[in-house]
Amino acid sequence: KNEVEQSPQNLTAQEGEFITINCSYSVGISALHWLQQHPGGGIVSLFMLSSGKKKHGRLIATINIQEKHSSLHITASHPRDSAVYICAVRGAQKLVFGQGTRLTINP
Amino acid sequence: DGGITQSPKYLFRKEGQNVTLSCEQNLNHDAMYWYRQDPGQGLRLIYYSQIVNDFQKGDIAEGYSVSREKKESFPLTVTSAQKNPTAFYLCASSITEEYSPLHFGNGTRLTVT
Image (cartoon, rainbow over all chains, first blue to last red; front, side, top):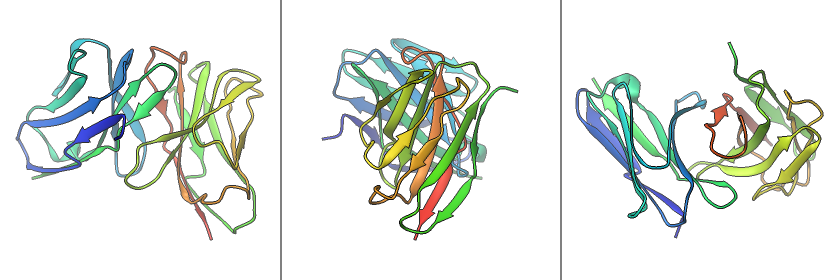
């Protein structure tokens, strides 16, 4: 079993829909990162959080430390949100990455 | 604008040749990292460096080498000993190793035939 599991692996939705991507992890962590990877390959850091909730524009990230679970929400989704979203957790000594969720938003 | 520059974007090499991937940052970050990305897998750490003239092996260091002679630069050499070098390589940096967001370059796609 991977230390970091993301679901779903692939998600297709219509423009305007509310999107939720989930991340579950099995190790103790000090921080969790949400990253966005566009088709060209470059990766952008969206959030780094260790508790509670963070919001930036239409993006919201939450984390439940007790349940070892985090969610990334996108409100009013748009085709430009189409990308691979990656969850990464910082354990004792290193970052461990999930496999990513490929999101496609159709107009 | 500050950022991380990886070059080249695409690289093609013949089997048996060493190849060096460039990574330069002007963010004044102490920590730098090299990751490898393969289809269907999460990023895997090759090497990381917390300070100039010091670096540590990551999970998949075999067949790779690095140097950190300057704070801004962290080149990765893929040697002929790396059995499956074709992959997408990403360089990243952070202010410190812990508790700081990662900044990534745009990656280099290496194809070895």
